Length: 215
Image (cartoon, rainbow, N blue to C red):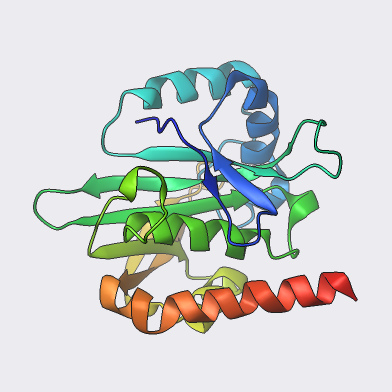
């Protein structure tokens, strides 16, 4: 599924925009980068732009997901924005469970700058239909994250944000290269938890990141 409108972040440093052909090469590099595959070993080590294009086109008509590309704001207003990653929601169920899964990939060159926090804040505001979200948002009740049991940075981020560890899927992701498996931790955020604690914690992080950047 494709949304017509971009989702701005809280600070305006980034926007979540519909996937476009101009980013196919960047997506190719991101999904096959060793740093990306460190915790997502099921991703292929070779993912050419042609496959990135095919994947983008195949997902455009899928109503169970919404993909976004993350673009950072250019210093010069007339300059093009920079691709810094991808995010989105998938396994969207608006009928029965009112739930979805959320994922994100940040390009290694742009990690540890607070961009992931801003992107996920914007995505969750859209998932839970916060006022001002493009198209009114999805109005879901639950958002789920899955991450490798060994991915301590992402698990730490989720736990600090207030997501709840709900369980572990044993040996759920395969590593085609080694034939081994990774167990996967499942975290959930309910609508009331987003409003009570997660939203505030993420916004506090964003504000701290901006304060540091101004120093």
